[in-house]
Length: 111
Image (cartoon, rainbow, N blue to C red; front, side):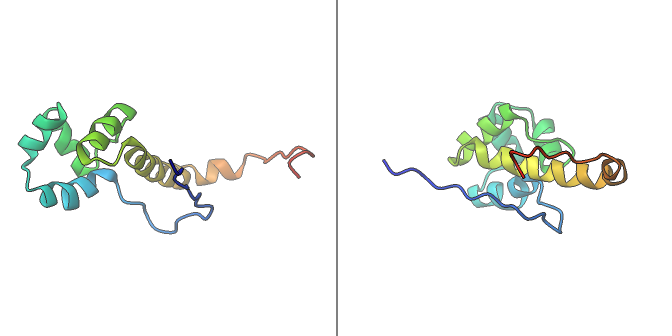
């Protein structure tokens, strides 16, 4: 079986990454023709939880990524990676001044 190649993105995105809940709201549920109630039932979560995810007020946990990855048939990594990209983008901006004060150390082995 051939291994899938993964490519790392090394550049910093200049725009806000899309919250994975927006993908569910705008693309996945409409394409499947499912209501929030039915999707929540199939995922084994409450409607309120799914609404919070789709509104971007709740993040995708590893457990939720497993559920959504199974539901969509594309595995959990995509969903978790989208959430991490979203969270990191916001954290870096929120902590920009604080992080600028922290020195960067490099060992000779890495130089």
